[in-house]
Length: 190
Image (tube, rainbow, N blue to C red; front, side, top):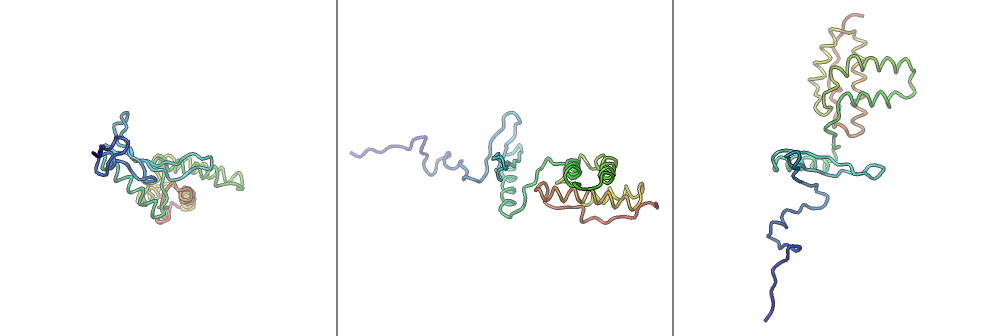
């Protein structure tokens, strides 16, 4: 008499729950975080030169919303779009540009750019997440500044912000540079 055996827990059959829960390799992961009380969806997008994984994650209280966010990241990755850093702020972008983008410039130029950034950009736009910065935000900010500073200073401020966002864009911190979409208003007479 032939002996039939049921599948063991290590070998789930095709229709079992364990077989359906396994995600394909490279498709990201989904887990419940007890400490945060949220579903965490993660995807590895590459590795640093030191060999450390670069992971982008999304979270939500709902499993389906967390999965939806993960699928959006996967779609962006397949389309060749950069995976932007969701915590990167305007202040971090400006500081990064001031530190690395002004190499070889005259010390007085560097001092002027640092002063303008510290007085006008970082206090008003710095806390904003870079990926959430919109052209309307920049237009509103420029209009407000046009009442306080000259047209030449406005040009400098827009230039600093534009170059900072462009540097962040080149490093996959943001998908597009919204400052390029903004018109420069006329400032106060010099």
